Amino acid sequence: MATEFETFEVPGARSYFGYALPYGLQVRQNETSNAPPVAESAAALRALGESGKLQELLDQHGAVLIRGVGRPSAETFSKLVGAAEQGRGSRPHVQIGLAGGATPIANSANVFEKVQAEIPELVEEIRKRGLGMKMVFRAPGDEAKVNQFNWAGEHSFGQELLPDDDDATTRQKVERQVKKLTSDFKWNDDGSLELTQHIPDLCGSMDLLADMALLETLVLLILRISAVTV
Image 1 (cartoon, one colour):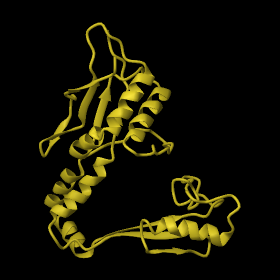
Image 2 (tube, rainbow, N blue to C red; image 1 turned 180 degrees about the vertical axis):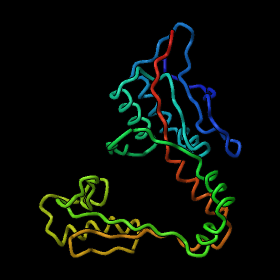
Image 3 (tube, helix red, strand yellow; image 1 turned 30 degrees about the vertical axis):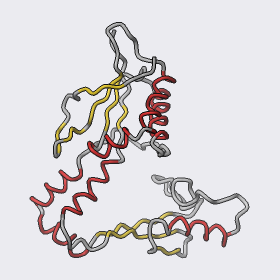
Image 4 (tube, rainbow, N blue to C red; image 1 turned 120 degrees about the horizontal axis):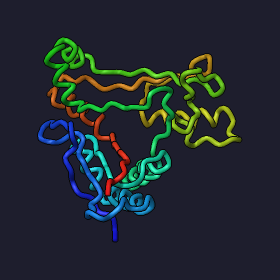
């Protein structure tokens, strides 16, 4: 029998603008059933992603908590998250945490409202000036001890690079990827790549800024693997 999901109320969940954060989904089971096999759970999560339902829930709630899909283990977690993300057309991001491992989540629109109420002068400056974020990506072989990223990495701008590319071809391919984010970039003398992403002047409705902030939460997916007590 195919694995099916049902809604459950998450203890401690908060409601923002009529939507719970996080939204709870659990495997539908009877009193005598066990947790489904990992392969079956992975197939169900992939189907949920491919149907568009998972993305719809993320768009509405910001985060989804899924339970009852397998026995807790790092391997199980990896398989299930990978299936869910690939099902909705996203490649899972792999970055090992240097410490801790817990990721806090929040409703960005709610955070914005609090900032607007408590620091209105900051919001006013943002309305006038817009926002910018400057980033510097080191050259390959010159990575920092606490940050192993460089501009040639798979998770930065090296997706098209080949081992036999010369310097000119390498830079051309990297710049093509950079231009998908911003046209404001430069190569530094030390071989690093500096770029700035801009959010334009927000003199219009501040609802726009709230919507933009809310988008940050829509990419969050919480998959908590928990054993089912029988």
